[in-house]
View 1 (spheres, rainbow, N blue to C red):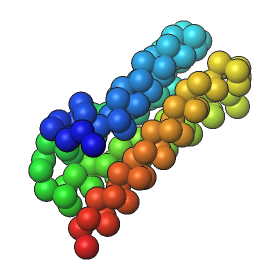
View 2 (view 1 turned 45 degrees about the vertical axis):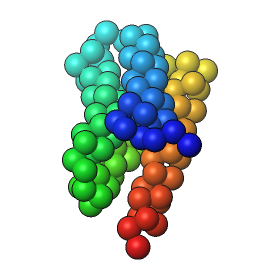
View 3 (view 1 turned 180 degrees about the vertical axis):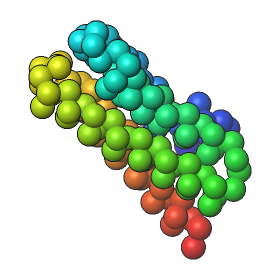
Length: 123
C-alpha cells in the first residue's frame, strides 16, 4: 500500500480532477444563454470537489478534514442535481451526460468510503 503524502496521492482527488475536466467539456456544449447561469454553477460545483478534498487533507486534523469532505460531498450532490437539470431542461441530451454522471457517482462512492474510513479510525 502506497503512503499518502499529499492530496495528489488520493484516488478520490484524481477522480474528482477528471470530473472537472468532463464537466468543463460538457458545459462547453450548453447553450450560450447559460454561460452565466447553469454552466457557471456546474463548473463551480465541479471545481469545489477536488478543492475541498485538497484543502481538508492539508489541514491535518481529522474533524476539519471530515468537514471539508462533507463540503465536497455537498458539491458532488449539487453537480449531480445540476446535471439532471440540463437534461430535464433540454440543454443537453442524456447521452452527452452519461460519462459525467458515471464520474459523479464514482467520486461520490469514493468520498463516502473515505469518510467512513476516517470515522472508523477515529473510534
